[in-house]
Image 1 (tube, helix red, strand yellow):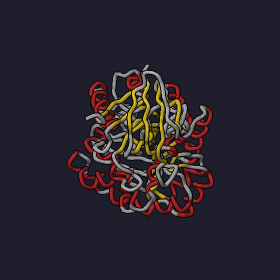
Image 2 (cartoon, helix red, strand yellow):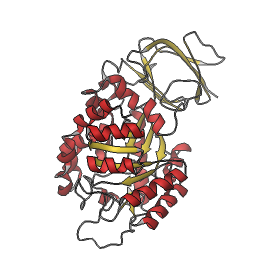
Image 3 (spheres, one colour):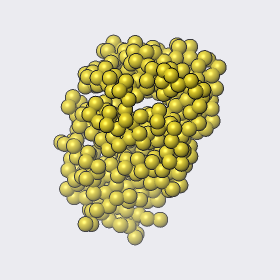
Image 4 (cartoon, helix red, strand yellow):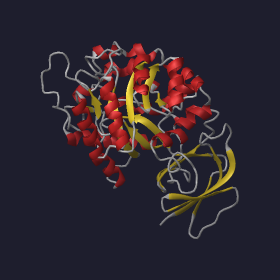
Length: 412
């Protein structure tokens, strides 16, 4: 059982606009045991002096697809499960090396990948999963295109598929129940058109009100919630009225609907970095021409949506939603949001607020007794420069997950 004491740390966790100086943190048996302004001592402890450095909770990305090794998601679904798992292990390790110690996968990852991380077979962030996202025929997880007449369930069980197709009240209830049985910790639905799918323009609505309400009921029966892929204001409003708790993307939200979200306690998970990456690199990595043509429909409204949501008091969490080789841009969402939001709020979106949405408040995203010892050391203060959190972890000399250093160059 290893014991580590971090001393003389400056804490940045999103709770304050200035660092908390001179803090000492005792880590034992994978958890934070003590946080104190006074010196801490423990027998056989490894002491790490962080004078001049910042200590942060491990970061949390609330919108990832760890199985998405290709930008062309239809092609990704055709890959052998074994190859998808191998690619996912590399993608997840990259996330961990950027300081993300927990990620919420919103379509694709299964209980097996989650277990592989927990057992140490794959080195990566802690996974919070929804299993397969639910989509209607022709919706955002139907990648068959106009001329493909394969059965709509052909890819339901493929690891490389982000989602499964279900239509009608009985099918959506069954799909939700099956995903929960298989280990889903929340349910994800595709309730609007999307960029990456071939037959649903952005303005298309996914599922009927009755179907969305039925899925919400199934999630609530299982003591959890529904996250929904939503872009247009009409779709966002309908989703929130039906009980959707987590609004993914929200690019075209209006002030009136944002106010409704705040009143209902719904979270927003913007993912602006993916549109910048898709615009500049998507075609090079195999994104179909029909998808490239839809990018600006949502990309150009991104920053304004942040301002609208912030003004309405909607809780925002951090999301990236990147595909294939573009996963390397994961941390750049910090800088994009920092153009219009206070740095403290941007950091909070990837720590304290993200932990709440993941249902792990007090266990992750914070530096407090009882929390997992998920910690990152930063050379400099991210409250002054959010770019310190980018660059593939180059400004992070140490990254710890559950009390174990997965990166440590402090002694170099």
